[in-house]
Image (cartoon, rainbow, N blue to C red):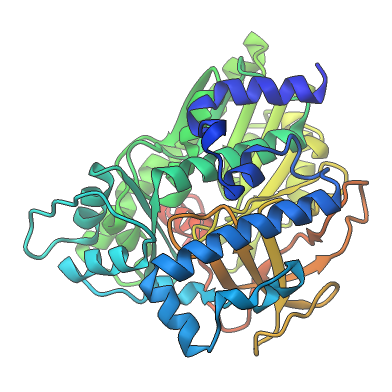
Length: 455
C-alpha cells in the first residue's frame, strides 16, 4: 500500500474528526489538508502555518477579552503581524497562567473567560462545586475540558471544545501513524497503558479515545474513574489516611495492570495479531522488568508499534535512559528501535512532535505549529541553543494557543538522521532549572508507582 492510500484509509476511520471540507478554515486546512506533516515542502508549510496562525490570532485578539487585555498591556496590535517574519512578535502566554485559577463557581467563570467564542449553556447545581463538578458540567454541555498537573499537585486546566479536541486527536494520531508507515492497520489490537479515556478528564487519558476508531480493539491499564481528587491524593507527599488509601488502591491496580499486560502479550504472541502498545514509558518499563524477573521474552518483530509519551522517570530520582529502554524493548519484545517511538506534546496545545524512526529526533508539524526557543527575556534564540520551548498553535480555536513553556529544548534546523525537511527538537527534553516536573507522564507515574519500587 502506498502512503497516499495508507492515509486515505486512516481518514476513513477518523471521518468524524474531520470537518466538512466546504467549511474548512485556514486552521482546518493546515491540520487536515497535508498528507504528510513531516514531508511538506517548506514553502508550502510556511504558507499554511502563517495563514493558520494569522486566522487564530485575529479571532482571539477580537473575541477573547482576556487575551486582548494582555496584548494591550504589552502594546501589541494584531495588525502589526503582516508576514510570517513577524510571527515571533505574537505575545505568548506562560503555561503557569493555566494554574492560576480560583475555586468554586469562580473557577467556572475563569474557564469561561479563557475560552474564545460562545459557550454552550452550562448548568452547575452545587453552590460550591469541586473542580470535577465544574469540569463535568462543562463537558456535559458539549465541551472537552481536561487537566494535567505537576509535582506540586497544582492542576493545569484547559477549556477545549469538541472541535479543538477532535483536531488534537486527529493531529496526534495522523502524525504518529505517518512515522510508523506502513505498520498501522485497522485490524491491529492495542493496549493503552493509560486510564480508560471514557472514565477520566485527565488529558493523558482522554487522548486515547481515538484509539477506539483506528484499532480493532483496545485494552486499558486503568479501567476505573480517575478524577482530580484521585490524582491529587496519589501525588500528595503527606501521610493522610485518604492519601494512603488512594495510593494503596491505585498501587494494587498497577501490579494487576502489569500482570494483565504480560498475559495480553502472551495471548498476542500466540494468535499472531498485529499489535500496538501506547502510553507512558514507565509503565512499559515496569512490564519489561517483570519479564526479566520471569525470564520471559517475545519476538513480535515487524507486527508491532510502540508509541510512548512523557513519563521518562521510573522513580522519584531515576530517569529511564531512552537508548537502554529501546534496547530492552528489542531484547524482550523483539521490536526494533525504529518501531519504538516517542512523542512530545502538552495539554496546553494541539502540536504533537513525533520521533522519526531513523534517529529519534522530534519532528515538528510546521503546517500549523510555529516553534520557538526563547531565553528568559523572551528573545528568540533560534537554532542550536538551549532555551524554553514556545509555540504558536495555528490549530487552536478554543483559546489562545500561543504558549511559552518551561521545557528546556534545543531545536535544529534539520534532522541529522533523515531527509525530512523542517526543524526538529533533540530528544531528552527536560525542565528548566527550578521548575516542577509536570504533565501527563509524571502524574501517571505518581499514581501508579507505589508498589513497583516507586515512591
